[in-house]
Structures are given as structure tokens and as C-alpha cells.
Image (cartoon, rainbow, N blue to C red; front, side, top):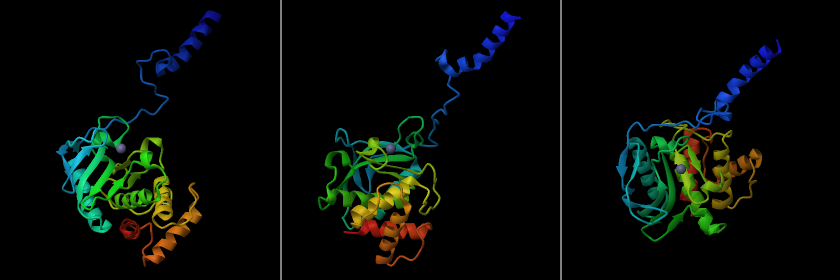
Amino acid sequence: MHPRRAFLLGAAALPLAACGRIMPDVPDFDLPAPRCRTPEALTSFSTLGGAPLRYEVTGTEQAFDADPRFVEKLEAWADDWVTVSGLGALTAVSTYGAHVDKCGSWHAAGRAFDFGVLTHADGTEVSCRFDTWGEDPTRLALYWRLAASLAKHFNYTLTYRFNEQHHNHIHIDNGASGYEPFGFDAGSGTHVALLQGIARWVYGLEVPSDRGLGATLDAAREIQKANGITARLATTEGWGAFLDAAAARR
Ligand SMILES: [Zn+2]
């Protein structure tokens, strides 16, 4: 009996072995695998808002690939930003990339873009390189104005507040929202961080830097009131008006 029992116990342990602890080539079913996405279509683009695209790492002008509909969205954002910001036409846009064949990221679908530095006709640089200028209030005001403008068009806008990987760029994608309209979501850490960054650095209001909602929403209400915005933040109209006001603020 004993050898038989031992065999059964051994058999019971086999599924664990199949999860990769003994056979590393077998996928580990205990962990959610990063989802790999395939782009529906890719188009090459070498300008944004009429300005040449540069690779931020080398400064070289080059083309990037993205989903054609996503490129249209980027162009719509660029028009809006130039109009609302009052900074004049774009003359250069640096990026860390658009389509990247990497599982687990919307870059793989060609529906993401990483902003480095925007240069405007009057010489103004709007830089996402938090890693190079740190706590410079003038840079931070421009950074958060840009983040506001991007967040109106791209529901998933990740700033340096997200993690250290985002200290040198702002990541945008429309993975979660698709091409549908959206408003402010109080349950989204990304949205709350946006409110806090805008309140603190564009408007100079004291807000918590944790996820404490109460004081953050108080600051948002103060900004809405000062700008005559009555539509609720949770509506597409109210969120857009709030973000436009921030992007326009000098
Ligand atoms: Zn990215």
C-alpha cells in the first residue's frame, strides 16, 4: 500500500511541476501572462501637428508607426493643444516611441505614444523630462498644462506620478476607453493624480499627494468655480472644460 500511496501523492504534485517550477519551458499558469496584442493596422508618421518627430534618446528625426486612427487622434490633440495653450505652432516633437512589439502594453497595438519634449515656434519647450529638471515650478506648470490637454483626448495619461519609468516621458494610450468619450473617474488613481498635479502646479493650490480624495475634489471645485464651469467633472463636457482651462492657464 505504501508505495502506491507515495505514487499517488507524487502524481498529485505533478500539476505544480507543470506550472513551470520544474519545467521552465511550460507557461506558469499561476501568474496572469502579459497580454500580447497585435495591431489592427499600422501607418508610419514622421510629423505631429506639422512638426517633425524626433527620437528623444538620439535627437534624430525619424518616422514612427501607430494605428492610423490613433494617429488621427494624436493630430486632433495637437490642433487642440496649439489652439488652447496659446504657445504657437509646434516646431518639434520628441518621443520615445509609438508602436513597440512588447506584450502587456498598448504600444503593441499601436495605440500608445510616449512624449518627450515639445518645442513651439516662440521657443517655449514643454518638457516631460522630470528626470532632468526635477522640481522646477515653471517646468512643472507647463508639464501639467500639457498633461491636462493630453488627458482630455487620452483617458490613460501617465505622468511622473505613476512610477519611475515615467520620470522621462508622459505615456498616453486609449486602451481602456477605446475611441469613446469619457469623463473624470474618481476611482482612477491616474485621474486623481492629474487633478492633484494640475491643482498644485498650474493653480498653486495645496493638495495632498496621496490618493486622499476629499481635499483634491475641494481644489477641483475651486478651479471649476474660478473658471465658471458648472458641468460636473464626471461628464465628458465637465472634464473637458476643466482640462481645457488648465491647459490654457498662463
Ligand atoms: Zn508608453
